[in-house]
Length: 154
Image (cartoon, rainbow, N blue to C red; front, side, top):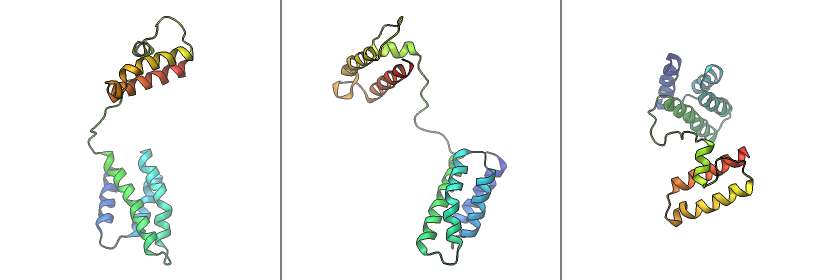
């Protein structure tokens, strides 16, 4: 994580834990992040929070607008913490080749396919792989993705 992001993380934590929420400080930090951040998610969170934070800075703002501003600032804080959080859970799927898609659907590999052939192959395979027919949800999801990929290439 770059040095600037670490500083932003410290500043957001300081503002977040402060007894009275410093709306002006949060607005200034959000503006800085929106201008200078390289990470799209974080920059977008800051840009979306900025109007709420600026609105809560006015003397006529009510408690509800300050609560909304604090919640929006929380989204910035969460995005900052997510940058260096360990990545657990599902891994990104490796894109399958057209051959693998055809194999999964039980379709011939050597010729051009029509949309109806792809759909018929999908229906045949779905009868075996659907979770209600004894297959798994993962297999059925892969089957649907294979059909979609072949239909796009058609």
